Image: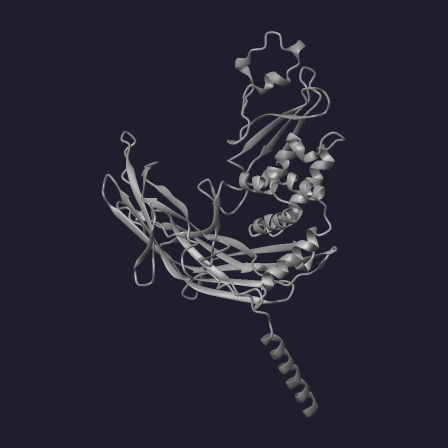
Length: 470
């Protein structure tokens, strides 16, 4: 009996030791409240974690991390709402895992006015590591008749919308900065807010002004940015901007926003804390940056054996998701510079989608197999470009056998801009389909495309006014 008791005691101690050694995963969390309905608000919770805190296991000659994020909204002892997201990250080699790379997620809840508690939990599905973050939420009441400013959302980047992204809002892509922390590597303080209850008359051109300034914890104004006058788009508007704060010393600061209605003269204010980190430089002889060493190792692991032609091929296939500045910069680089640039190019985008490089290059292979020829790479074709830029269409309709028309295709995407279409046709008869028309706001628009695919001998008396239009 004593032996059994000793065994149970040892087993308990072993279990306790194993539990105590569970890997803790730190989370960075922020939230913002926006007006939705008279009695309810739209509350967003932003959560981010560092890639280095996840466990990667071998997977099909690569390495994969899997984690589960859960957001609970509670009031007292009751769970009001709960959402969970399971995410995977795949890397070709372990040196790709860097100390500064983050994965960002967004949870959105529509809540009645009131105070709540939020619990954000992460579980590493490979190692069992866990993390938890608790915070207070306020779905604050917004007046229906006085000028109001929403909470402020800090961001790493604000740009044109990304198809199907959870970070799209009011026709903008807004990548949240959940930590509210900036540095010399991320020196632009991007922010987003919403303005409510502007006095608006469609018959009169109304205006409102906005002012932004930075203060310290004592309230002293350290930086004041030029004020702006805006035309009212309606009774509500968005306030979005970005300021370079690279000259600030290391410290804790507050972004102050002020908006004034130029007709009612009502004023609304909002203030939010952020931090700026500027590491102290040390002589190279005294220290080496391990993050830089990791980065160089990762660059060599991915691109060290590649020649310039291989680098150019990969970047050229990715120009559809690159900015104009990135394209210009890449064209000026030598081979080592291109290696470093291409590594950073994918690292930056993997914050939004951990598998973006793998997913995108698999898409490149797909368009090569579908549309490539001895004369043209698949990504250089119109269909290849659209598939790379917007993904696979929800509907792919092929019209190859109509006697009075040349072969054409209609691609349909249901979730982009409330539904868009692309029309391609083989006008020359060589199997090369050209983009003739799209309903996407940024693409070629040619409502009379049907006239182009109708064969000449069948087009006598064709009334262009009756062209089929989307």
